[in-house]
Amino acid sequence: MIPLIFSTITGNAFKLAAAAAEAVPDHCGPYNIRYITDEVVDMFDTFIISYWCNHGTADDDTIALLSRMKDKNIIIIGTLGAARDSKHGEDVFRNVNELVSKQNRLVGHYLCRGSIDLKRTARKLRIPEGVKGHLSPERFERQKESLGHPDSAELEGVKTAVAGFLAQLEQANPVNPNSNNATCGCTNCKHTNSDQAAKA
Ligand SMILES: Cc1cc2nc3c(=O)[nH]c(=O)nc-3n(C[C@H](O)[C@H](O)[C@H](O)COP(=O)(O)O)c2cc1C
Image (cartoon, rainbow, N blue to C red):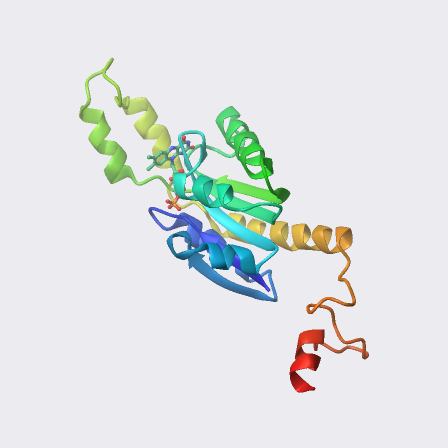
């Protein structure tokens, strides 16, 4: 069982997590990151975490959750307001890879664009030039390009990416036949050892 967890302020990370869930046959969630206790962290080896980009890296709740995880397999997915193929997009991708790898195993990372809340940023147009937080009309115009993201291609993209990451993970860690998650061995059987134990 693989839990999906999302951290969001405007909903993009939830959309991404919900799409990714379709590529994970044995999943639970998506769960709001605010409800992830240490007991939940202890229950699973592999997690899919959907973040939003805040100031060039992952948001604070995602950073805090990752710091409470150790030696977990992490598939990280997220959105940023800038174009994915910009230098900023590459910097965010690298920063988040480093963050995840600090004390966990990075299995894969999917990053795409997410719409920016323009009502929020428009207020910054009123901050005078030279004052912290000022947003130029040109930058505001560029932010409009984020609207509509993640789009259907990006939602398909996250599904394909996550399916690939899970296949890699399975190849690297073939299921231990003695583990509770291993199938019981009969042809085409989907039962697990724990199901068999429950039946006995
Ligand atoms: C406080 C704040 C900081 C942000 N920082 C960045 C940033 O550094 N780079 C970027 O590309 N987008 C940035 N964004 C845009 C969000 O990452 C983007 O809109 C994301 O899709 C929001 O996801 P959500 O809907 O799940 O909250 C920022 C947004 C906010 C509100």
